[in-house]
Length: 310
Image 1: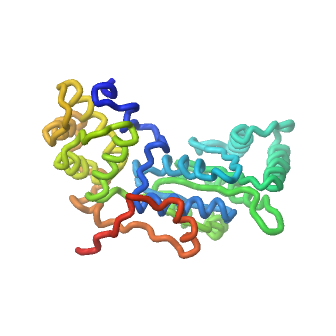
Image 2: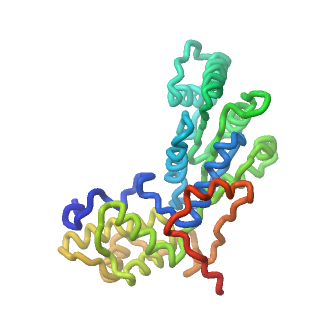
Image 3: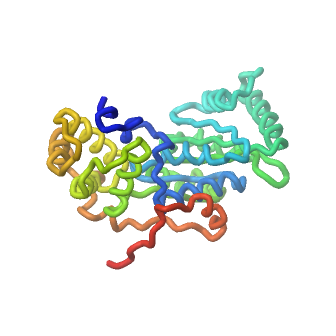
């Protein structure tokens, strides 16, 4: 609706997790590299956790698109509220594996045979489970057992569990201690800092085709204050701000427009009970030294020395 008015090729703040708009800030790049390492090294289980709206699904989809030299077959499970039979059926359908026998044993045999063929061809097989905090205990155990499909040296199947912080609590339960012991890589997403939010907004606008600033610095600062660095809320506020500016035929979005959007969306309360500035103090995840070799392809102009002054 407003794209032509602002000279854009696409909507920069859509709610769908579109990897094209992934802003490779250093902390995002580190998490992406960690995910890639866990999958490429055939470590079995990788876990990604983070608060609602911090970009987990976008990262999952982005990492699966980074294996340009390796054939990756992936099954993206977006609804984990399935029983074991339906889960296997869904995964086989995603992998495009013909199933002759619809019994559990039959499907497992088909899956194992198909993955051995992919392994011989040098390919990777990945199951990514989104909203994994909603998995039942029985299904979590069945997923663990899937990693028993292996050769003498490598896992045939890589599994990424992505979910809210409740997933961490679930994985600490004694009932899944065997699964927890198999987790090779843990990754986390965090809210953006006050310095990163303007970079994030500007980068999404640039990818959408913007050739000049559309938000004043003060407006972007206010967006961060309201959203507390949560990317999904940043997108929501910016999307409504651009609609509002379009309706007013205003080319540059000011704090006044952001305040109007705050009232319209009833965003007076800070998300997740964070105190003002609290999101800025969250620590960025550091990488293990084994992952450093995966960092080079992701280095770019957004890398800047971090300000450690308190």
